[in-house]
Length: 87
Image 1 (cartoon, rainbow, N blue to C red):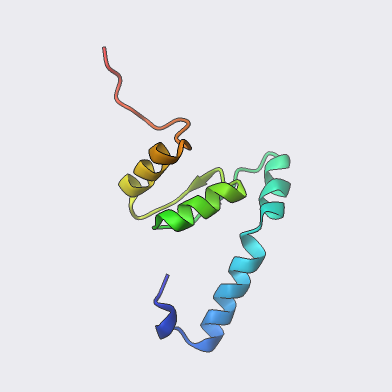
Image 2: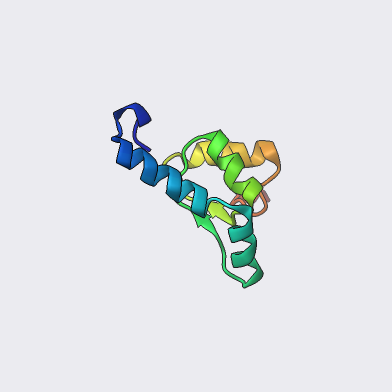
């Protein structure tokens, strides 16, 4: 996301409104109860990863996959990470 200090007032209002309407546990529960997977696009820091998974997101798109993998391993949310097979 852009630096909030460089956003216009209307951009900040739109960002706040979208965040308030879309990042709700009730919405995530509603969608997943109907078999719809919820992926959040694009999160790049641990605070946002945690928030999305706490709300019930199925997954997260990120510009930093290693940072997301490390977060998931550290927080026990790594259910099916592709790990190399050892023989």
